[in-house]
Each structure stands twice: as C-alpha cells, then as structure tokens.
Amino acid sequence: MIVTSLVAAAVLMISPAGLPDPRPQATVTQGVLVGREAEGVRSFKGVPYARPPVGALRWRTPHPAEPWSGERDAGQVGPICIQPPANGDNGVGPLPMSENCLTLNVWAPANREGPLPVMVWIHGGGLNNGSGTAALYDGTNLAKRGVVVVTVNYRLGRLGFFDHPALAAARSPGEPAANYGLMDVILALRWVRENAAAFGGDAENVTIFGESAGGALVTRLMISPEARGLFHRAAVQSGLGRDEGTPLVEPRRDGGPSMQARGAAFGVAHGAATTAEALRAIPAEAFLRPAPSFYGGDLLVRDDALVREDVAVAFAAGREAPVPLIIGTNSAEFWWMKPSDLSPYGALDDAMTDAERTAFLAAYGGQDGYDAHVLSDLVFNEPARHLARLHARNGHPTYLYRFDVVSAAMPEPHEGATHASERQYVFDNLSASPWPTAGMEQRQADAMAGYWTTFAAMGDPNGGMRQAWPEFGAEPDRLLEFTNDGPAAKPIPFADRLDLIEAYYERVR
Image (cartoon, rainbow, N blue to C red):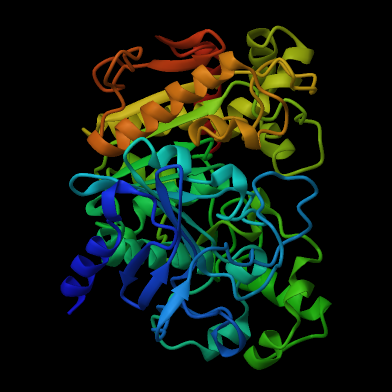
C-alpha cells in the first residue's frame, strides 16, 4: 500500500509541459502533503514527524506522528521549539514558539531523474536555541544542485536534555532517558528512510550534516547503535570532539554532578517537585531559567543507551559508523573568548603545568596570541584533527577542512572566520548572512555548496573543475582551506600548537 502511494505521489509531482505546479503533492506514511513550487524547487514545510511531546509525553521517547485524513497544507514552517529569545541569531526561525514543535521541512528539485541524494541538516545553537525553520537553512539553492534537503526541529534545553529521579522512577525498565533531542533526530531520520522516495530521494543515500551543537549531535549519531544504518555519509562543522557527556546517575569524570542530580536541583529551585506529574505540569518557559550550560555538562548526555561512551573514546576504539566523513572548523571560532573567562571553556587550560604553559605561550607568540586563539584550538581545531586522524586510521574516507572566508563587511574585530560564519556558504544562502556580501563571496558559496552536495552524492567531495580536496588517509595532515581567494589544499596550519594540545589532553585525560 505504501509503495503504491509513493508511486502515485511521484506522478502527482510531474506537472504538464514542465510548468510549475502551484500546489504539488507528496504522499507520506501519515497522509497527503500539499507543498509549494518556486524556482524549480518543491518545498513541503511544517511536516510533523512525531506526536507533540506535551503532557504525559514530555520527557518520553518520541512517537511517530499520527496519520491525518485529507490533504495537509505544507506551505508554512512550524513553530520553533521552546528556547530563549533569538536576539538577532539568524539560525532561529520565526515565532511562534511551542512545545509542540517536532516538524521537518523538505526541498526537492521539481524536475529530476532517478533517486536523489538526501541531506538532513541538524541545526546548532548550543542545544539551547535554533531551529530548522530559519531562512539561513532554506534548502532551495542546495536542492537546485540535485539533492533533497531536509531540516529538522528537535527538543532543546531542559525539555530536550534532562533527567530527574522522579522521571527515572516512572520509567519502564530499559526505557531510554535524558537524550530526548537526540531521540527526536533519530526518529526524524527514520521518517526520512520511510518517506524519502515520496520526494524523489534515495533512502539508501542519506547524508547528515550539522554545525556546532548540531555537529556534536552528528558525532553522537555516528556512535549511537540506534542510528546505525539511518545515514551513509556525515559532515561535522565545528562540532567539538573532545567533549564529555554527563552520565544519568554517576558523577562526571571531572567531578561534576550527574544528570539526575542536576535535575533534582532544578526541581527544588522550582517548588521542590517530587513526582513526574508535578514536573510535567511546570510551564515550559520555566525550564529556560537559569539557562542550562551546554559545555558545562547540563545538555551533552551519556545515557548508556543511545550514547554509551564519549565520542573520542568510541572513535579511538573504531566503534563509529563506517561512513565517509567531512569534518572541519573555522579559523577564528571563539576569538572573543579568553581562557581567563569564568566559563566551562575558560576552565579547559586550568590543569596546565608551568612547563606546559611556557611552551604554549611560546607557540602562540605570547599572551595576546594565546588569549586570542587557544580556546578555538582546545574546543574545535585539535579535536577535529583528532577525530579525522582516528576515522582515517580506521579505514574510512575522511576530508578535513578549515574555513577562512571573511566578508569585507563583517564589523567584528576578527582575525579570521568566526564561529558559525560558514553556514550561509554551505547552504549558498548569502542573502541570510548577518552582513552584506559581495560577488567574490558568492563564488566561495558556490564552491562550498558544490563540495557538500557532491559529497552527499558520491561520498567524495571531489569532482568537476574544483580544487582537489585531499583525502586524509591518503594524504595525512593535509586539508582544504576555504579562503577569500578560493579553496586551497595545504598542510594543517599551526600544527605545532595542535601537537601541544594533543599532548596536554593525553596527559590530563
């Protein structure tokens, strides 16, 4: 029955004489969707992939969306998940905001031949904010390159990553816990597997890609048994790599409290809630205060079901998904943050010995250089190199990059490309950039989007007339650097700094 429906959907999406279909349809497992067509691309937005995680379903494993009768309009994006105010963040879509937010959006070429690669985007935002509905993540320009693009909303903050002794007491034995946002993404990937053909996509050729916290979720999907087989390539943009997950019951390796201890403290601060029912009755917005700490252990979870170990440990043991991988970082990720700042990031260098600190200062050219660059290297650059080395050593195609494209109109006092500034180039959506762009930058967006979509299609980003991107296993410690003058293949910059960081991590961990 499903196969017949999918064939019917494909027929419906072909308009007479190649004219745009103002209301294209697609039949998915839940029913008929009515989308829109523009610029040769058909879009279907606000598509529910899970039942609303409200009431008794708050902090529960997500359930597939229920069927609907008749045609469902898919012309508008759905609500964003509960999160703090966007404050100008262009990775956040339009209001309204709701706990009923588990929707996805699909873009597909109107005219196509054969099943197309599928690219599933997992947004960043520190697991506290963001959405798959932002104009920045509009999939039109990628779809024009011959791929199906899917963007996903998933539960955020304490509604997405949380545990409490009362919730544990109410769970069934073996029921997954705490990592609800990750469970949402896994369910969305199952939805894609079941429904990709309705949009012309190939369920056997799915690429997951994500930035920052979204990149951290990509690496967790790579080590999660529940996600195995749901994707076939992966791309990690500034996605950490040396981070530690917080266990449900046991303290963290650094001595920090467990997920349940953190949840219990939150419950006491909000009226000493001692039952699952009382916790589920707390208004959703109350979980935003105080803001949970992404890197401080409130949101990155090691739950022993979906995520059983830390990412670097799994990669070192060869237990990650055996798929082609793009991984990389930006050249000035956290240029505004100093290691002396009072934050979980600022604590990363606290265990340095006097000898290590002396060596670091020399490598960074003094205190100013150290302050400007060491956190970017500790959090992003060395961990990306580390995971790339491990993945390549394990025999899997690996491609490392460094993004150093900087708009001339960017007002920040930068020394390179700041955190998250590559997103508008990957999506070829420079119109959604926070600063004006020029023609030269459009050439860089064309190149970057071309590499990403070719990788989705072939498992190798190389092709056409673009600069060859070194495969990390064949050419160790060489990467592709995206610059204002175009991509360039070269040795990893500042390798001496990263070597010091690698030795430091090996000593303290």
